[in-house]
Image (cartoon, rainbow, N blue to C red; front, side, top):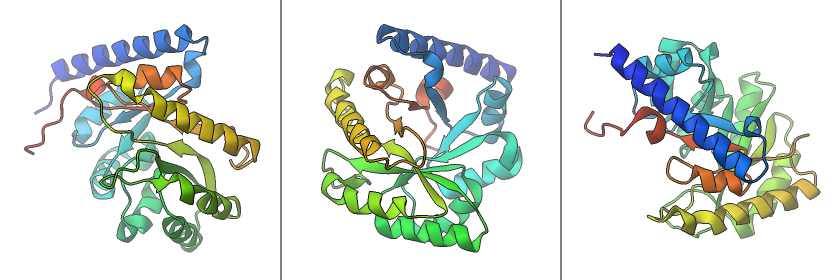
Length: 240
């Protein structure tokens, strides 16, 4: 059951997160309004997402296509902006093209080619995609390796449906959030290099980096999009 207490708890968490964003941005002379907050709603019920929408949250991040589909059916496709922030399996790509405004986790030329073709089949004119980069060479994580990035970027530049909007990273987890700073810095450098090559579809290139425990550091290093779940919604119930 859902309660107004949960709604109030969300609102106070949201207000705290906004204050944290503001102080991190101001500490490095950035405008807090430049930073887009993606509320990571994975494993949280549609009712809680509805509360978040009523508290003026406008962008949600989901990890799994199927789970997102259930929520979007309940809440409506146009109720918010929907980002896929989890690994996309190719057999779920068609549904992802139908559901999401942004796919943040393109990590291979093969996946990009499939999305481009599906956009044509679905008559979708534009789909914004980010490239997920693996800068730590972590076997267990998705993301394209730095050495393979140029080929994917070149492919995206020539797509007619996919719009290359930015870079995304899920760095290794460190107890001390400060240890993650070099990864954020590297991603920003990479983005700046691509910017100089006019790689991004008519934009400056978003930097999607930073989660609940390290988003302040990400903002200091130039994040334009942060993905925050636990600090907004509380701990996830993995038993469900």
